[in-house]
Image (cartoon, rainbow, N blue to C red; front, side):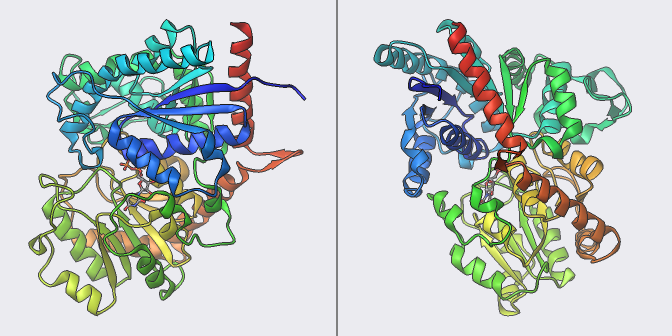
Length: 503
Ligand code: UDP
């Protein structure tokens, strides 16, 4: 057997929850495949605190013992940023932009971190894996003569559409609301309402363009990309992304805990406990006990991820639609856009007496702030997910065979929603955006449609079930039957280790 020296990989995730979770899972997976690899995940103070708590609550996993955490401090405050270590879970969209801007100032402390590693180990790390928004890490890797790899925590289709629209701004060169996106077949039409608010306003000189364009452009030139998807579920997206980037793209998904891929069992909080540090509105046990008392495939689960909320009008209409549907539901609820996401929730944002009626009549659970999502999706009672189509949520829902009703809000979510409906056929879209007009009756109509046992609902369920199987097959690791996750991880590690031998 080939012997290897201890190797070191440095990871630089973007500073938001939806990026930290897949980065940590990737670190675990890399470490599990090659025990001689140590991983250092470097981020700002509060993110490191979150990762530390998560790792500490997973003491059963041996792989975490080779994952180190390093704190980086913002170097300057001239981006109008709040003090070092701001809690990114509470960010409004504009603050995410500020954070993107300020993250370039992490380059100097990251430089010190790598210098330290070289001093201790006598050579640079094997590679630096950075988020696609951290293109500056390419310069960092270059200056130390190591390899730079980009990791997109999104899917292939959504990433390709997001990177290409940012770098080409195709909506600027047409008077129409519909336009083709470079890299996608000419027949694929995108709509202006599918662009996130930054992108829609971008003209190449504005704040969003100045922040995101140079970072994404640097990332497109890295050695290769890792993508949080599964080869068989995104054939179109992967082909487009590979052609567009013109470099290797390893599909190293699903980035989900293995327990979540074991079809025979419902998850019982092992995963959420690992994601500790969250305040649960209703104790997670209570959510699962309530689900136990519901019929198979009967419950509507509603959540908009870790960063987003909807407008107060939309909150009201969503509540009306859920109540009118008469179906059991779990709704993770937050104050509407414009209010502190972690602040007090006011009863006036919902129809009069809504929460009381729901809990008395036992129709639904209104969970404030945070719920054990993966466990809810894996529960046999959950029948549909009304989702903002953040990529982690998408992969969780697909892996558990739960069809979706799309309500994309930001980032590349509308591209994900388009792909889920048009390519995979596992979702229908309710609306787009945090300010769009939503009507309760339409909420009810789509819930009824997806819940149908036959017709459209039956079709969606069948397709999502097949995709769930493909996701589980990706982690098969038998001599004659290796899934795409296993092949991609081994190929990536083999390729990157070969770069060490060449240097
Ligand atoms: N999540 C959760 N409970 C919640 C809301 C979100 O566990 O109440 C988790 C969810 O399971 C997913 C992540 O937070 O892993 C959200 O990531 P995603 O990419 O879906 O959306 P983002 O938060 O980045 O917009």
